Length: 259
Image (tube, rainbow, N blue to C red; front, side, top):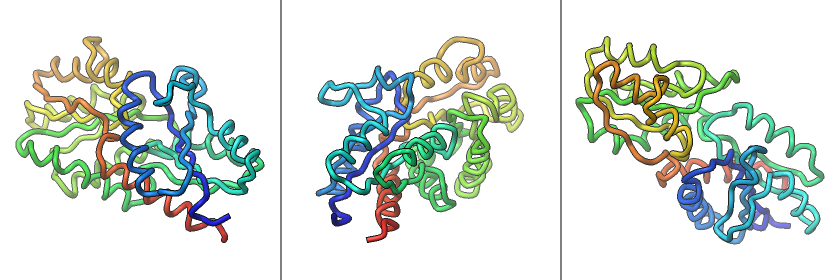
């Protein structure tokens, strides 16, 4: 087998809404970058697995199912590309499950892994941030109780070095919480905010945790503080430069395969 023939498995967490367009964009760019490789998609979330569908209206499989099928077809190696933002619980489980399979795997890392990933992701956001020079910019990600929670304040620091102290990074879950960060934005004197969903897909968390009228949502907290806001309607997975970072991680995973 030659490296140009090694299959690539794109492992997404999954979402029950608006996934197709985003994953379709990433799929198109990955296929362009890796012509000649088989590209497969898999859902790492057991809960969401049965609810997702491919563009051919077939139930999407989990990574282990895809790897077993590839092994049965005679493949010795596969690249498994994590389509996650950070190296959290879902990534840890993906690593464990792929190691249990007979086929050998090389792992492509999540979006925010190395310092240069943070820098490149911050540059991807420049067109949005640059159009609003007088507003605070608030990015809201998923959040986690995994030690990878540190990726969020680290990314905020990278953004502030590029765009100044008007950048704030919060999360839906765990740290930093919405009430404290909205108070910080208000104390800094900002009354207008650009709200960017720091999520690959603007799915359930976008609708329920960012935009709902419930008292715990980010939009509710901003309104309660007297802060007006404009919301970017898509997750960052629609940006071509984000796909390119994932493509570079696939290239790195291919490079370490020993033949």
